[in-house]
Length: 107
Image 1 (tube, rainbow, N blue to C red):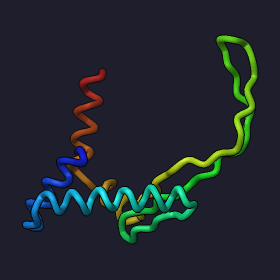
Image 2 (spheres, rainbow, N blue to C red):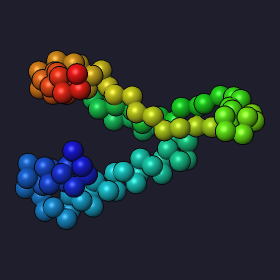
Image 3 (cartoon, rainbow, N blue to C red):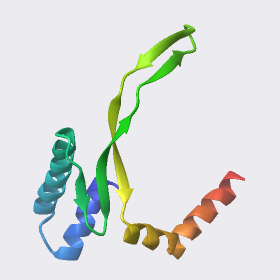
Image 4 (cartoon, rainbow, N blue to C red):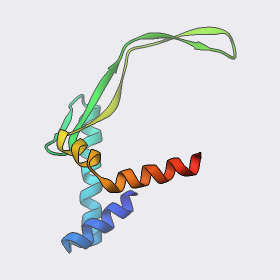
């Protein structure tokens, strides 16, 4: 599902104008990004948490040149789904059907 499809779905379910929904959805994403850029985590009860995860410094290798590179400590954005969210996905028959059909095509 794309952002445009999410906006359309919300507009249909709420009866709110599609343009207004787009402003709200895009504003939500901007708030999440700016908050995380400032070092704040974002918690949405019943949905999940957007958190900054620390990556420790390490030594990497450039295999083409045969050299080592020091990769400094850095932070990456991460999403941790809420327990309710995880349980809903685990119990979804539709997800199981989709995954089974994808695996059959690969074999």
